[in-house]
Image (tube, rainbow, N blue to C red):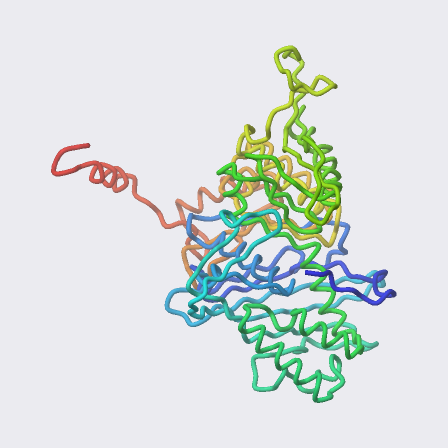
Length: 502
């Protein structure tokens, strides 16, 4: 997808954007869940403080659901198709799921605006399996097939703040949940289209196609083209473009599918502002020169931090040979390798040692934890330095040494600038980051996300969490207790076959 182009004078006044609140209804195991981020509870001039959300809870209690909701949000705001696999996110017995996200936009001149984007997601049966692919991934790993496709409906984008020199309260700007066509309120159409029949007819077609193609109407490329052709460029439309730009360059979601590539040693997902690249680790990669240059720069940045958190380790692209691409341009054949400064090993035992004496090794032989760290490190670096960057990582702790996990998060809290969302089962972060940055899932599907109450500044949140599991002093139950003797009995029963232990 192309990056939406602003008018020339708009580039100098782009806002810093953060997610302040999220609401999930009838989404997988979540009947209702609401999370207000720390930055949504108080005014924080962005660039002065980081914003973190760590999500903890029992298995199957809605942590991954929240990350998947963010993944859907990113796809819609980018104007691309939501793959059919997400049709399975509609809660069993429900016709549709509803998602709502609140954004805070802070501008260089001090103005602040808010935007609320809400939509419904339903599953529509189809004979054609739908798929979703990304650059650098082949069909074996990237396609998800489903007999259902996703239908996006009831979209509503509301805004508040300073517009055209006056302050407005939160109100719908583009609303497809009513009977108005191509969208309501009718009084707001004049800020996007000239009102001529041709433009309205084109938007009606775009809306119908969006429903059929599992895309957003509000952020669709088709609607953007009609709005651009009308040339109004109102401040309301500018916010639509700013949100689309944010989703394209600054909102990054790492789900368990990406983690699966790493665990299976299928490839190394690498995230850049241009998108996600899946670099194969079991064979050489062929890439054009511009991709090679971008990834080389990315690895250079990663190695600056990697060598500090995993002393002596670097990761690079080892060029095997030049090649020619299909279009006649020059390309590169590369293999992903790691190199270590092994002072206790002689170069004569490693014929492939680098000229500087570092030990070279194919990256596929590194541990899951190292591969996971390298994959997400570029995102963490971006969020650390860029105040408008939001990253969401599912199972951040997978394969990562807990002390290192705590060090990274503590560093981000103390001097980072962006927004960092993660799920984890490792409880080390509860001891090192602020309690306002931690949210817990509950056993109540009607109130799935809560923050613990009555926690003092001197309380150890990890110890308090364990005590809460045993005692249950909060308004909601955080853990459905298991009984040890029943677990023992179940193991024994499962091992008995025809009255004899197997």
